Image (cartoon, rainbow, N blue to C red):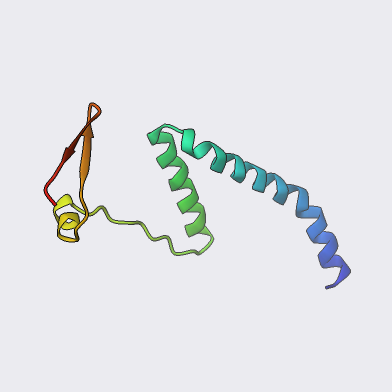
Length: 87
């Protein structure tokens, strides 16, 4: 590897490390965020991935009836009491 490429990389290394530290901080905070803030964080990450050229796959929400057909029991929690739907 040419010396100039190494020197260029070494010059950018502090900013790359700072960027990584910020990303890790977001990852650590993610489980403790409110739902709205968590969704905003995920949207920012998805947008960054799209800007980088990655294909972002967003899962679709399956209706309870479809899950039931696949043998998956759906449990809804309302005020601490689970309500099971047939399935």
